[in-house]
Image 1: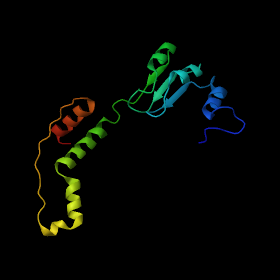
Image 2 (image 1 turned 135 degrees about the horizontal axis):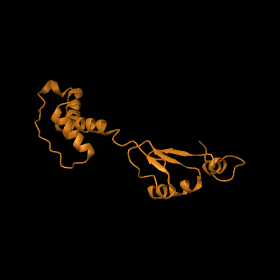
Image 3 (image 1 turned 90 degrees about the vertical axis):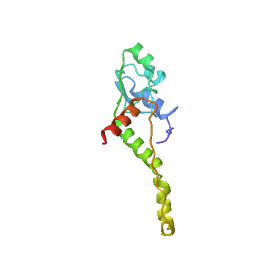
Image 4 (image 1 turned 30 degrees about the horizontal axis):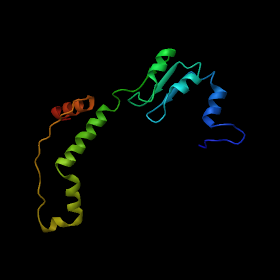
Length: 141
């Protein structure tokens, strides 16, 4: 999308906000698009700031509180997927899957066996995703 339009002073965002500021009641963003103080101040009818990502790093929570604007996000929506990916990547590293794939595809298997590994992994950092990884490992899912 072009940032400037012929006959419009300033950016398209500025033009859009100036044209519609009194009718915008909600802003929706993600980790890349934010609800910073400047945007919040520019929208006098704003009632809610929605982030469809896990964090609220890009939302000015202080300004929202000051203006009585509700804020919401999608916490815990990716926790299971992150845990599954972490387990898969851990197994790939511990079992040297990428290395053994290269060994197989190169034809080296014809000259001799590939050394298999046995490893034990420990999870040291306990956050929400690490706790889910631990839970998944214990349950065997």
